Length: 175
Length: 452
Image (tube, rainbow over all chains, first blue to last red):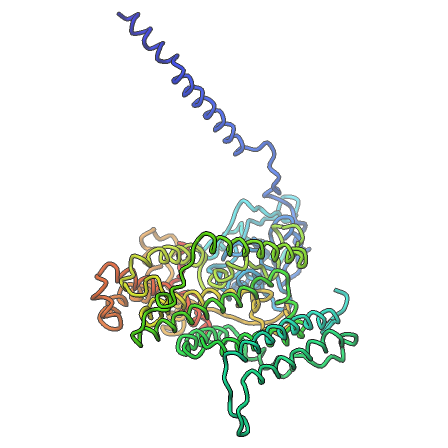
């Protein structure tokens, strides 16, 4: 009896129909795994999230440095206009409206986005156009060798009260 | 571009000569039509055929064209250009407010004056006026830079096509409305203009296909598609413009938060257009042109299409320059044009100006519920306004202006209709509020990405 059932199951499994489905399932499964492999590339061509930007003295008071904009997407700002404190901080170059890259206009002393006209003060705070919130700061600290070091893996949003965080700025009197 | 300000070059004058020549030929044909159709007018006590006036005009165009085609050897001396006084007047008067008012005014005028506009002679005069305005404006350097850009040429063509089809539909509608009023059968019934699909329609379609293909090939050869430098994530072109058909959306994004102008409102447009057949209760005007029988439907649709979509494309294409600032049609696109737009949220206005205090902020370290409570307290005025706009206005409309609609449509269909209209109206309302009060957001909760 058992032998007969066993033969029947084998027969069913070996039928061309079942074999075709098994093969299809196997190929699809392997192809899916192969596609999933693309999620883990061997090489990531992204700039490092942590990088040194030279000593604080490179950044004079009330100036915006475009030096690292193209390579790393940050502005280094040294100003005493945010709550009257002398600070150096790194602003992300992503507009908080729809993600275009604003330009720093030195004559008008503002960041201005070419896509929808959002404007930000040197402090990063939005004041014109549709941007709903200030530009984001990224991490900035003084490394062990005395150089400034930006850490783009951290971000600080003003509207969340994160700009008081000590890793979001460096004391500007060091410059 | 080596020349600093090449105001009028020989090639521009030469090109304009061809445009005037085209106008001349068009008007020659019009003279022929006028000779057969128009009657006489009384001038100085005797009858003069209208066609002779057109013939004079056409002859003038012919001479202008000749002057352009032969007199381009000294461009600086060429006299036929847009007067500077007109240009500076237009530039100083133009702004987002005047542009929007003008487009709405034109829309209202087209509807009110439709019986006059659809007269062939009036339509012809308007077409001539717009073409001559275009030709004269092309003598201006800044206008030519923007309007003559290979990118923007199809938009100019689209404007003429759009105007023509609007005119045509109104012409058909006015004709049918007159027939209805006189108790006569419709145009299509009386002048039974039925034709056979094969061969009449298929042949005309084939001919159109060949002609359009030839036109596209010629266009593709003559006007080169602009290639720009390789894209860079660090550098955004200034101004940075969406494809032309999305410039209405981009203009909307200036007044709204991305998720509103980029997701909610476009979805409402799509769903709303799909909903039209279901909320439309008017059984008249089915299969023929009419305006009087479908006043509400046609006006509402055209308002959404002409001033809120086509005019916004014009605004975005021709009048928005670097930093998305507004520039007059003859104005130089100065990257450093300073235009201060200090925008305020309703909550900021309420707490700073009206209450003269600070914004309510949750004490540091408070729990989630307290923070939510403080945010809601901070934005209470905007939230009340929004809720009132979407919840109180529809019933109010149902008992007042849309009383008849409500009775005929029933509750659900009326609610869908009124909400769609309110969403459509929210764009001009927000634009006007931005321009007149520098209002940024009615509800501003950046903490939750919720800004209206």
